[in-house]
Image (tube, rainbow, N blue to C red; front, side):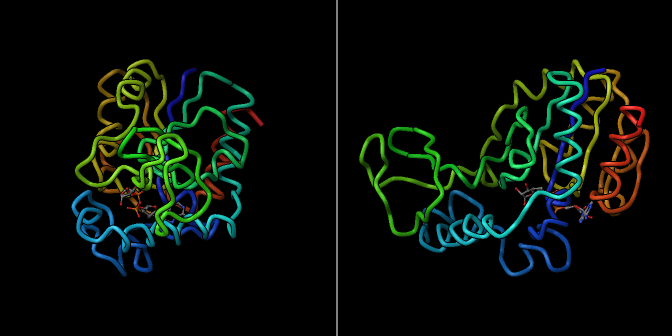
Length: 229
Ligand code: APR
């Protein structure tokens, strides 16, 4: 059985990474257009760089939770039949042991050089304007996909949705396209669809089944059920 899992901020919430749209969410203290658009970066690059520098530094203090670990366990069991597509820019899936992870909104631990287009692994700050290790230009930005930009890997994702038997959405509000449309795409190709979320997402009605609760409980239980344990 081929499975595509879509994850959002909710899967990392129990690790202590703030979500975006919950009451204490990341956007509560920021206007999205001030920190997560190309225009914001053009007008106040330092504010944007510091916003992502802070989030990059915060990764050191968080750990994967049982939901990330359960998906890594599922990958060990079914290998290439699982693709995790994540909207998250943290590295908690990888740290839990998942390898087949597509970061459609980019990654905090990567910098993108706008001069030479190189994607450079990055753990430090960017606000202090380090040069690109490849071309030397002072032109590094967070390698994250901002509002108005095209997510990474869309061809690969659409192909996986077309070929999957089961689509599972975990911890995402269904507020942001194109990810919010994956459930309808998968269903139109004949996949069964399942949502695991704390509360019904905006697209909840499009799923064959919704299970409500914390990801740290629901995801391990679902993986156990799937693997017959
Ligand atoms: N377990 C499961 N679900 C949870 C948990 C939890 N412990 N905590 C919160 N949730 C759910 C919330 O109920 C909400 O539906 O996770 C969802 C988080 O939604 P958002 O904050 O909107 O995050 P996400 O869907 O990932 O946002 C999508 O929007 O801002 C952009 O680029 C950013 O990738 C992000 C995209």
